[in-house]
Image 1 (tube, rainbow, N blue to C red):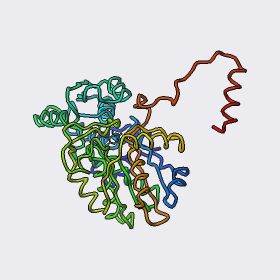
Image 2: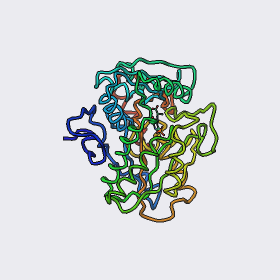
Image 3: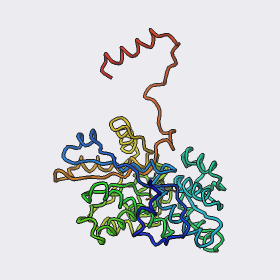
Image 4: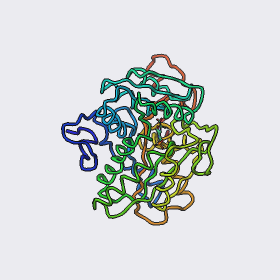
Amino acid sequence: MWNGIISKYKDFYDIKDGEAIVSLNEGNTPLIVAENLSKMLGGIKLYLKYEGLNTTGSFKDRGMTMAVSKAVQEGSKAIICASTGNTSASAAAYAAKAGIKCFVLIPNNKIALGKLAQAILYGAVIIPVNGNFDDALRIVREIAEEGKVTLVNSVNPYRLLGQRSGAYEVCDQLEGKVDYLSIPVGNAGNISAYWAGFKDYYKAGKIEQLPTMLGFQAEGAAPIVENRVFEEPETVATAIRIGNPASWDKAVAARDESKGLIDKVTDEEILRAQKLLASKEGIFVEPASAASVAGVIKLYGKGYFQQEDKNVVCVLTGNGLKDPSVVSPDEELKVYSVKIDEIKAIIDKSLGSGQ
Ligand code: F0G
């Protein structure tokens, strides 16, 4: 039985037998071969690490099991975070499991409804603020310094330790042959965690090569790409609507040490990649997650991937069901009467037109 990432990767986690672990059996997400997209991107082999299948529907659970376990072990009775949605959903769920309180600060009207619904039902105290993620993070950092509540944003080092497990899993699944790792970048914690995870595996002799890291920000929220703070970040990918990432330096180090890059993709490219993932591979991700695939498509178009037979892993960070509002049919859906002939006519027309 799978018991979550701490139990699986205990050699890498400093949690001793008998210490309480707060887990929702996170991790063990599938690495799916993207056969149809790989054909489009002749020469490279594209793999999709579908993190939307974590228990709360995003990669945040990997970090939250560590952060909340440590908070509970240290006697904390409450956790707090700022969030564009997924961190708040994950924090709220792990707090519920641990029986402690959870406070979440979210940018008003700027988080996907599914994520808000999760935080509500898991029982968090939800505090919408008239500001963006960066404003909210500043406040929770200051509040946490007073010591009454534990901060579980990715500035909490246990979060990134937990998220390293994503890299361990990808290495295990590909028997070490990860050539490129493509990942969306928001607050820049996850790209930093993956890089640290790959280095752990390399040092432990479990892999013989380190991948090249490819990070992607949204064009309207691209502080690392442009090397300047974005005061008013804007993008359809609300999860990565961040103008001043906390792990900026770590992400730049991951980029440079791996001889990789951090680039930007437009909202249009993001939504196109989201649609391709769904219509060609059967995988529904939220817009931010599609940035990793949009980025690989962009680089492919520029001739970036020179050699054949390279394994490119895209991390699909969150489940599409969290944010259905960005999806609408190409034409307005007409309602038909319940008459079999009418329905047959639609099917015949569609089959005839080869759709
Ligand atoms: N993808 C999704 C779906 C996210 O929710 C986030 C971050 C990222 C990518 C970027 O990861 O911040 O480690 O660079 N979401 C945070 C949140 C900010 O509050 O849920 P990052």
